[in-house]
Image (tube, rainbow, N blue to C red; front, side, top):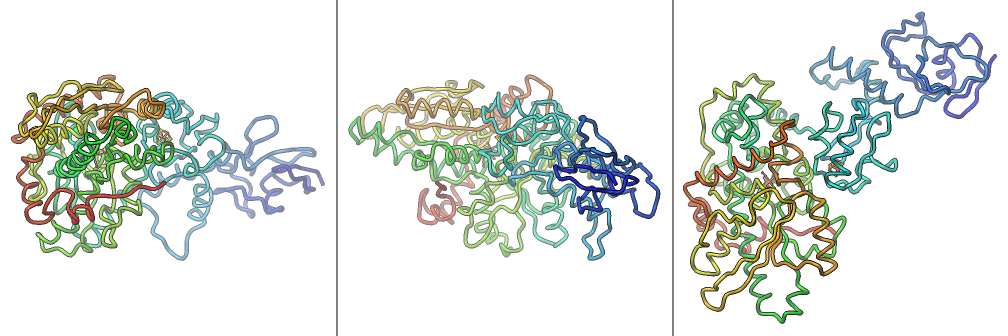
Length: 563
Ligand code: HC1
Ligand code: SF4
């Protein structure tokens, strides 16, 4: 017999044993595929690697034990290697997911055992260290660009800092790590299977598409960067099996009506208050970016009352699809599968927030990123550039230039000003393209003079932050009394949603500028450029909501936050 130490525990085993036999005799799991106790070692699958004391890896099936040998079967690189072997084999041999059966194969059981503990997720992004090549990009995106510091490169695959699981960290789900990963080791949590399942169940499929998707989806399927592909995107979604495609931009216009009314209400109180009281009230923050909401809940909970109560356009659209739209179309809301195509990974978490359950229902059933839609278009061999343009479906498919602007940093502010100024001043803002809020600076500020129609001229102090690092700098300054505003727009990704963590991966250094120019040109092309002029918005208030901020609007279009 010889003495071997496995994972810090010492065992006496026959000297003719392999490491694998020694481990099995002592109930220590080493994943294998080609090895079989009644066959001589084959040594082909290479899933059984173990970490030797000298730093080398050895194959447990074909390495004999030796007296005093010490090894580990539980290190990250060993687990990652086994998971990688099984994933590769599965990809090669079983392109479709194996059907769940009672008599699961040995391969399936071992596959689950080696991969389940390995993949880490918080419902928005997922990390598979076995695919990681340690390039360091995700860590740089998270720690240097976003200044979140969630991830670390360990030399044997990326992991959250401090040995935490992802959902124990302060990750906000922005997904920037996934958009920079060159191998897919960090990716969005896929919702493609949800869509396939709903189609198979015969549900009525309703898609909505975010403002930033139409200026980027082309990059995934053979169209030049900076082109607006709205009509082709709608056509592609119909070709993929959607019964209806409606426009998140319509809901962005709806957001302006709700959030703009809320802002006017807050400002009227602020302007009537003493300067000290007004200062104490602080700014109103926009609430459409879910990674920003996660951030304020985690890091600045004392400002939760300063968040607009308006749900994001995506969630407003969900409520509208399962109430107003379902009724108009004569469809039982329970038979609708409603998914959103978003440039964002955090949106996958937003749909699961308990505050979003409306009438006992989840209003958005799945979120596909722009990248996932690109994958589907390619997988189904849809010739995207050749598709004829198709229109969004009425009565929730019309948008104004203001709604379209939401896709870029500064866009929500610009859209809100177009409407709020007009309501307060009784006449339109002099320039529709309001340049102080345009461009890609991380923090932008302006003071807007508003001659009130029934009183003096008032000043609205506005600011815009894009990129969560800039937002956090701004927040610390606000806390310290170094900055003071009335209305602040925050988007967690640089450039706003056009630079979202679910957007196409690109090596073009000017990619954000190109997408931003596409958004501005889409605004200029619009027949109406102010949210309150959208005829379908006027109709939905007349027929369904009554007034902005009405009781029904509060129930379906507003929310609360978690502290
Ligand atoms: Fe966005 Fe929004 S603009 S958050 O950036 O308010 O994701 O595009 O859909 O909801 O409209 C994202 C984009 C998106 C919402 C809108
Ligand atoms: Fe960091 Fe954002 Fe990735 Fe979370 S999602 S790990 S915050 S880059």
